[in-house]
Amino acid sequence: MKLTTEQIDELYTFTRQHYVEWYDLQSELVDHLANAIETEWQENPELSFDAVLNKEFGKFGVFGFMGVVEEKQKFLNKKYRKLIWEFYKEFFRLPKIILTTALIYGVYIFMSFFKSPEEVFRWTYISILIVSFGLFLIARKRLKQRQKQTGKKWLFEDNESTPTILFQFLFGFNISNSIFILFEGHQWQNEHSIIASAILVFLTFYIYIQLKIIPKKISEELEKTYPEYKFIKS
Image (tube, rainbow, N blue to C red; front, side, top):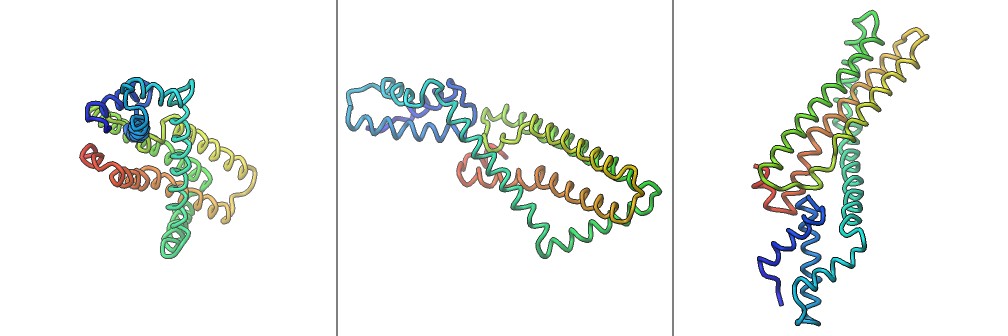
């Protein structure tokens, strides 16, 4: 016996009712449940759809799909960090390392025009964090609007949460203060400016990768796995 289209729709409804709000994870669970139900029907064709569904759902334990959601989130978090690191490493390889070195040198020259390069570093660092956080909030707002219009959320796309970015923002702010305190009390030397320039460039790269490159890569992967995503995104 094969599941009907109506029964497949019921499985999607079932996953939503059990707190799985992301379409990509719903699809994986629906596929798993559908295969399990059809396999059970081969041995016990007299059982009803609801009876087999409840039996299969019971195999997930008392917490239902929560364990699956947590495991998927861990997997995607790991994949997300790996993607960032892979793109980040490109800036240390030819030919991009030439651009990286040129940018560091350019920032170093820029800072040398000021009497207090340490202040330039501090406020530039903080400004980059504030602007990037603002851009992130704008991107999240657009994402939420699209999710509301289409009625579909994607776990991989929704992976990087506002609390996580806020934590990174505060962490980056603390780093800037720590570096400033470390340099404080010492006469600002050329090596200080070189280190500060490298920090600013690498921070900018990291933010650019998070806000521009990674979202594009995630969209490409979702389109490969879920063809309907292309139409929803557009």
